[in-house]
Every structure is written in C-alpha cells, then in structure tokens.
Length: 275
Image (cartoon, rainbow, N blue to C red; front, top):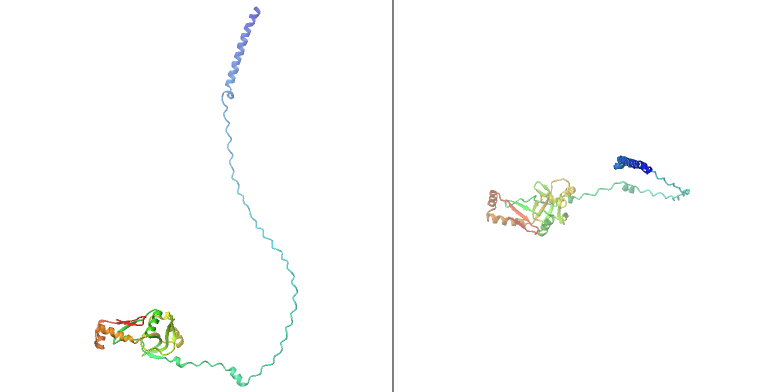
C-alpha cells in the first residue's frame, strides 16, 4: 500500500504536466500567422508592355526580261542582175516642113469675145415708185418658193440689171428653179419693174448679183422683178375708191396733203392687191 500511494503523486503531476504542455503547443500553433490567418494572395505580375510590330518593307526589284536570241537565217546570195535587152534604135523622125514648124511654134489665139453678150439685152425703168403721181410701195414675197409661185402665176420674171443715169440695162433674165435663180434665154417679160432691195432674198436665191459682177465686171448691179401690168389697174382702182373719180393732179395733191402712200401686195397666187 505504501508503495502504491508513494507512486500516485508522480502520476498526477505527470498528467498535469502533459496537459499543460499540450495547451502550450496548442497556443503556439494558434498564434502562427500561416495557420490562423489565410495566406494573402500574392499579387499577379504586371503584364509586359506589348511592343508594336515593326513595319516590314518589301523592296521589289524589277528584273529585266532577257531578250530572245535571234538567229538570223543566212540570206542567199543575190543573183547577178540580168542584162536589160537592148532597144532597137528607132529611125529619127522626119523633119517638119517650114510651114508646119511655124504652125507648132505659134501660140493658140484666145477665143474671141462675144460682143452680143457684153451689150445689154434691154433698157427698162429702174424702179416704179409712183402711180398717177401717188407714191406706191410694192411688197413681194421674201421666200424664193413664194416669189417663184407669184411670177409663174402672174407671168412676171426677174432680171439682173446695171443701173444707169436714166434707167437700167438688163444683163440677164432669171427664173427660179426650186430656190435658186437660174439664167433664162430670151428677152425680159413686159410689165412694171420693181427693185428688190432685200439682201437676204438675194442670198437665198444663190447670190445672182455676185455672179453677174463676176461675169460682166464691176458696176451698180441690182436685182429687179418685173410685175404684171395689172398692177396699175389695181392701183388705180384703190385710188378711186379712196379719193373718188377726180383728176390725176387733184388725186396727187390730196395724197400728198394727207401723207397717203399706196401699198400693193404681190401674192403667191399671182394676184396683186392694193390698198
């Protein structure tokens, strides 16, 4: 019994010492940072800066194409030229007689001028400007086709004349073929001459004035239309209708006092209308 009791105290102390040692170990383990606390995450490394790619330059070098080697075919040697045939000598021509020599040496004589063409065909009045002492103005169509219709239906004609001191010398008689004035044979028609002063009508007719100047020489060349003699009858009727059946001198005085001018129209149908 004594031995057992003597042994109890040491066991108690030993157990107490073991528990104290265990508590110390637990306390130590609890105070360690890598056990009690969660280890802080390590910072991620910063990304490396991306370096821009260097621009690549490609140099193109043009290589000349090699020229093909030409192989020339040897040409055959030229044949020797043939000797041209010798011409048979001709006998010399007979010498012409003295009369024939003079005929050959003499230059050709110019063709003689036609004096009948240079002379005027007829002599007419330059322009009719009054009827019974009353001034009159005649209006003719300005289109070549309408003027041709009036001349054809009224029996009139057209002439190219050279003005003189007392009238006009007729150089050529004209007709209208389509829109062009052409020269007609024969003398001019009878009637009342009226001077055409419209240059555009002359151009539209093919410029017969320029053709006459080139053929007959310079001068005061004009284009005239010869109207039907019925123009005077139409004009007289219009004057009587306006002033009454009075004498010619009285009619002219009244027309001059009132400034009246007789106007006549040459219509394509051939009639002449005066007012």
